[in-house]
Every structure is written in C-alpha cells, then in structure tokens.
Amino acid sequence: MSDIVEKFSIRLGKALAIRNMKPVELHEKTGLSESLISKYLSDTAVPRQNKINYIATVLDVSPVWLLGYDIPMERVPFDESSKKRKKSFNKNKRLFPILGTVKAGYDYLAQENWIGYINLDKEVSDPENYFALQISGNSMEPVLYEDDIVLVHQQNDVENGQVGIVLINNEEATVKKIIKYEDYIELIAFNSYYPPKRLTKKDNFKIIGKVTEARISKIFE
Image (cartoon, helix red, strand yellow):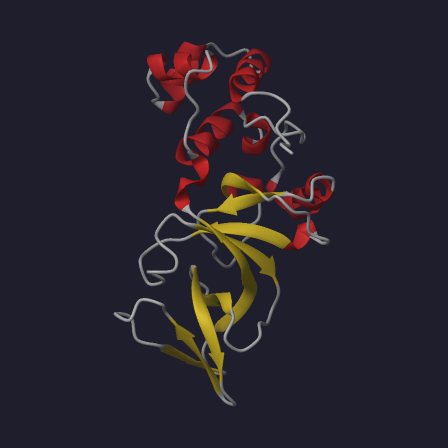
C-alpha cells in the first residue's frame, strides 16, 4: 500500500504558491532549466534524488513532503530534528530517510541531510531507530554497489560477522562486515582488492548501526 497521498507535481505547485515563487524564480535559484521545471509541474517528469533535496531547500519545505508523503510540510530545524523526526515517522512505520553520508560532530539524521526516502513493504516496531544510507565506492562489491541503498538499525554493537556501520576518526562512516576478536575488530570489505582493516581499543571508532536490508540503486527510477 502506497503512503503517497499527492503527486510530486501537485506538491511542487503548492510549494511555489505558498512561497509566492514563480517557476522562473525556481529556475534562477536552482539552475534547473525552465523546461525541466515545466515538466515537473505538468507531471511528465519527476526529479531524481540528487535534485529533490536541492529543490526542497530552495522552497524551504521537507523533501519527503515534496515527494507527496503524508508528513508535515515544514523542514525540521536543526536543533529539533531528532525529536520531530521521531514524531513524524512514528505514524508511518514504513518510511525512512536516506542519507548520502554519515559524519560525526553533528546530527546526521537532521532533515537537511536527507537525499531521499525508502518505503518498506513491512512495518518495524521502532521506526525512530532506523535510517537508510547510500553506498559510496566499490569496497562492498559484488554484494553492494555504489548508489545502492542499505537500511540501518541504530545500535552501538553488532554480532560477530554482521554488516555494520562504523565511524572512524570522527570522519565519514563506512559499511563493512565486522569480525570481532578479543582485543580488536576487523572491518572486512567484500571486494578482495581491499585488505581487512584492524581497529583496536586505541583507535577512535564506534559502531553506530547494523545493516538490516539492502535495495538496488534503481529504487528511484
């Protein structure tokens, strides 16, 4: 059952009217061609995920609302994002934000970091603890390819041999199979070109989630 209640074209028209913005102004602010915006408004084209968040930012609306889902139109302020994200997604246990990257030092689940959404066929009992992540690079081929989507359950540990999300040195997180030993862990890439990476207690790392499901990159097409 679809959670979309309105077409993208309708939501885009509403957002333009609410912001008192003409299509030509959206063209000037986003750099998207006027003909493409016209196609969006006439429902003959829908933007890919790399344009959705940009359009939503210019219009100051939620990118997921813009896609037609039944959630509040307003973008969530940075300092209230986690709290309001839980409230809005609790009523929809099948819809989750997709992040392009995960970094330390800020709320990576803030709405401005979303690049799209994923809609599951099944409900989960704790939707506030899930997010999705877009794969970058080829270290997990041939299982996961660049731009594939993984659904992640937020947790600070995983069982031995599970695929998890690990944040290293307060930089971007990586998706790897995690093998545990008494004094260290190894991050295993599925691509044999990449050797295992050993991390000890002295290394600055933390597990932030477990991969529970994967989707191919064609999800948006």
